[in-house]
Amino acid sequence: MKNLKVALLQVLPEGSLDKNLRKGIAYCRRAKDAGADIALFPEMWSVGYEIPEDLDELRASAIAIDSPFVISFRELAKELRIAVGITFLERFEPLPRNTFCLIDRLGNIVLTYAKVHTCDFGDECRLTAGEDFYVANLDTAKGCVKVGAMICFDREFPESARILMLKGAEIILVPNACPIEINRFSQLRTRAYENMVGIATANYPKDKSDCNGRSCAFDGIAYLPDGSGARDMLIVEAGEREDICLADFPIEKLREYRACEVHGNAYRHPRKYKSLVEENIEEPFIRNDYRK
Image 1 (cartoon, rainbow, N blue to C red):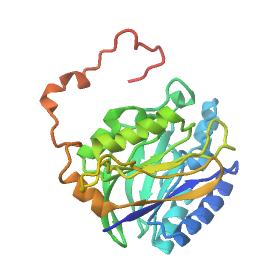
Image 2 (image 1 turned 90 degrees about the vertical axis):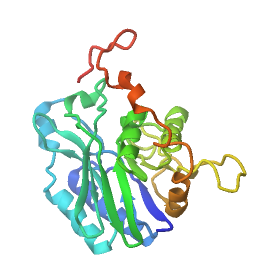
Image 3 (image 1 turned 135 degrees about the vertical axis):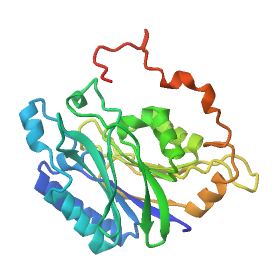
Image 4 (image 1 turned 180 degrees about the horizontal axis):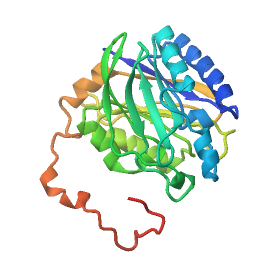
């Protein structure tokens, strides 16, 4: 595999499950026409990242993995021979989850991930958090690539991308629903740099409340083998409006880079990191709304 093309679907939700389904299908078709291998949606596309305060309403807006919404994207992926990273509010007990499914070009779900770092200081306090991070072998027409996922606030914890790297991820898909300003942009760049992984982030456009577009991708290659010094890992950045942004990852070059550079898992000392798994929290970091 020389390259992998990810279409970042920076699309505006339409206010209902059926309308979001129809629009999502149309944009996947556009992604296929653009030559994409993967079409990636922003966070919780099924509901346009709307989280009702009323728990009965919240549960009513959640859908199952075997729902017509998800099945429709599985059928579409098989028809178009393209992978689809679909996001939705998943029916789950005791409360719904913020979920991502990666569907391969044959229509199979190869990865299901629920957001681990839910925003418990906000509306996501009413969601069930995920328990782990996962990596899948994605079979594309160009060959196999190892793909992982994290969702929005997950990016703010180095452990998220680090675990995915340790599990073999070469590309990390990141559905998003918040403003991508200089600090969050820097976080994504850093996750790519320190783990030598590609990062692809799909965000909602500016017309969506509390979002600003700027879907982006970093290829994870900080230095070229010719010794010419540091380079910008940013391979694409969208504007603020609704659009499809195509990120072209040089997978072959990334693999060569990962085989010789110093980051990732090359020089780590895990036995010295015991404090990272201690669960005690002390001031100034105590928050009353924190959930384990």
